[in-house]
Length: 285
Image 1 (cartoon, one colour):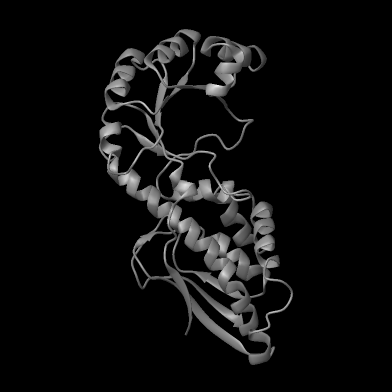
Image 2 (cartoon, helix red, strand yellow):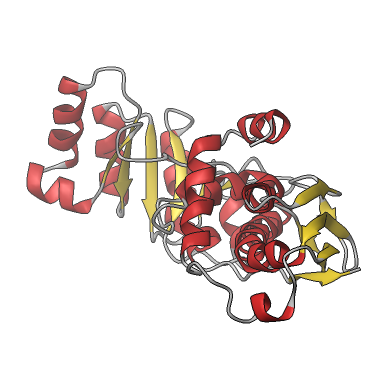
């Protein structure tokens, strides 16, 4: 990997080695031989091409896709930056190299770029819907195995913010924890006794639980599947003593109604688990 590409991945908050490992797994899925391209193209045949947006959207994953071409010895030049809004027809990456290598790189590179750009595009729609409120759209741990870092990066490219990256960087007390501990307070205090400075969020599905979580000292509360009326009351009661995050079945159509209640975040797992890909194609020039 070139120092420039390595630095771009680091600047994006991504681990270059982890990205390279991800790309190598993607390449390995296609096996050793390309039984279509190898009989047609001589080893010294060279082609150039462009990865071009075929619809409007927000780009994410350009340096990730470039890593595919890098590992296969294909020259690549970024024509767009992650977070850019692009229109149909805009060139995102230009490539040149052995035709066999370009074609082997094509699908893994597009799989990553279209998926991550789809997440960024979906996130940007939520971000636009929340404009003028203090609320921000947030992702969850509902990510594809092995792809959490890049998927959450794509959320940032679309203007969203990340929830915890894993189980070790923040605690989230959910219904099963409460049931096992006996109460919200007992669960919160058990965590605080072991991790006195850790960020702890408590999931609540009733206003009574919200009151208990605030009394226990929770600095963040997730309002799970609450009505607009209950969220409004929770905001009034908490009065800034804890961050409030709405979650559970939220839709883009109803996003603004949730945001104007005064919550700080809207938790949207669909950003990563259900985003439609952005249509991008590779065409020889």
